[in-house]
Length: 225
Image 1 (spheres, rainbow, N blue to C red):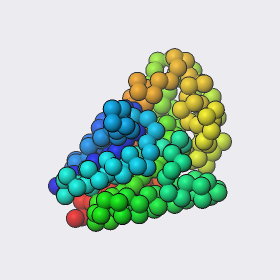
Image 2 (spheres, rainbow, N blue to C red):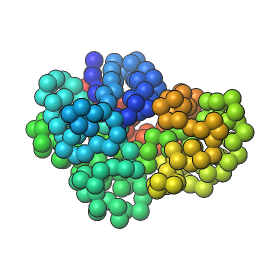
Image 3 (cartoon, rainbow, N blue to C red):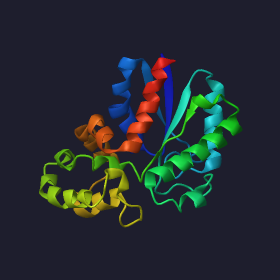
């Protein structure tokens, strides 16, 4: 049995791990548990600073010597104090950019915690969780009875990009903002996100999103321990 803790930034990602990701790994005896990352002494959810991430990683990995730690952090809104943040901004390919940030974060956390390197598997989602929902627009719009009306508009957005993970990153054009602008009733992250993810399914997300698929394959490899 392998226990994996996933640091998440918000309740939507927490529920996504609990309801969609974790069940797919139980047959491998890999037990995945989300943990909403504390962003301050009293607050949880929202943007995560590097210092707060290292603080929580240190506590998690030192308190349980058998657990593996991973992350589910959005590239959009990532704190500027993350290692190689400025250098990574110059990398055009978003997947390579995320890999660069993940590699730097891995070195930073392993050094700070003093753990075995394979106990920490950093993951940064390009550009944010909602990008995954564009993996199957026809399934996404089944989340609300009125949303099928907006399938053509959402499909047109999806068709402009090579993959769902390339839907771009600015406040006005990030995936969640596009959903909010197009859909009525309005897309609400915590209410609709996990339901939409269940409709789209993990298998389809993996098929359409190479960076996401690579992360899950890293987690699956833990079964060979």
